[in-house]
Length: 117
Ligand SMILES: [Mg+2]
Image (cartoon, rainbow, N blue to C red; front, side, top):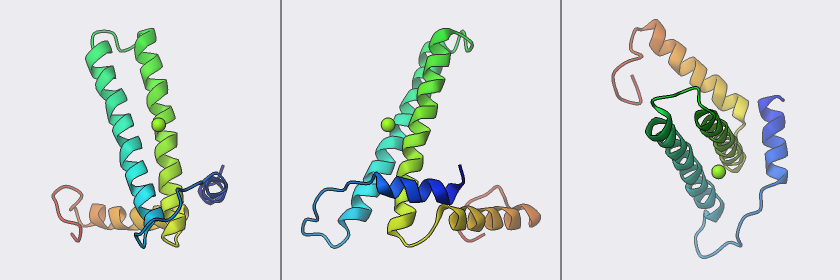
């Protein structure tokens, strides 16, 4: 599946709460949802570390890794719908991120900090 096809599909499954008093309820809902799903990814990885560190090939480890993959899909859904809400596409943002990081790599500034290096 292509990224923009996924984004178009994701929009068909997006059901947001009714707008309240804020002027950007959709963005707020999506950003909070993204943070929540990212936390679910982190929690699954924590459990991999906590519960399977001694046996990374155990059935439990495989189950947790599969669960982590499932959470990544949830993260993708929120990212896709955030792109739609912000008037951009997944592929456009992927290309821009690729360009930014290739530029940093070429200038040998991949490490370090700061958004505009
Ligand atoms: Mg989830």
